[in-house]
Length: 216
Image (cartoon, rainbow, N blue to C red; front, side, top):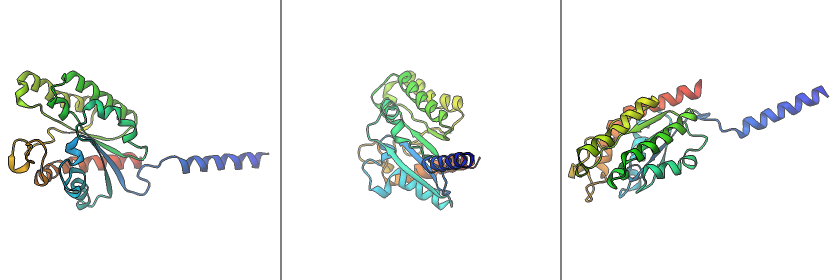
C-alpha cells in the first residue's frame, strides 16, 4: 500500500502543478494595463494606442513582454475596481493602473476616487503583483482646492503601498493641441508617443520587478 500511496501522491502533485498557473514560466512577462480611454486607445488605429506603442518600446529594450489592454473608455475608478478580478488573470505578472481621469472630469468627490484606488492597490498587493500607478490631474475649472485634493491621491497611495509611480499620465501632452485629437482630451498618435517615451523607463522597472518576483 505504501508504494500505491506514494504513486497517488505523486500523481496528485503532478496534476496540481499542471493546473496551477505558472507566472512567466516561458520567460515572457505579462503586464496588464488597467485603465480608461487613455489606455484603450480611443480614436486611434490599433497600432497607435498606448498599449501597442508601449509593448513596442519595451521590446526595443530587449524585454520579452506582453502588454494586455484592459482599458475601457469612460471607465471610472469604481468601474476599474468592479472589473479588477476578471481583468487580472492568474497568469499576470504586473499591472499598470491608469484610473481617475473620468472621476475628475465628472467632478466626483476625491475621497471616492481615493477609496477605489486604495481597494485596487490592496487587492493587487494581496496577490504580490508589482504595480505602476500613473497619476492624474483634475481640470482647472474645478478649482484649486479640488485640484490639490485630487492630485494628492496618487503620490499618497504610491508611497503608502510602495508601488512605482509616474506622476502625471498626460505629462507633456495635456493642453497641447498638436498632440491631441480634436476633442482636446484624448492624445493623438504623436501624443501617445510622447507619453510612451516618458513612461517607458518606469515600465522597464515594472518588468524588472516582475522578473525578480517570479524568479524568487
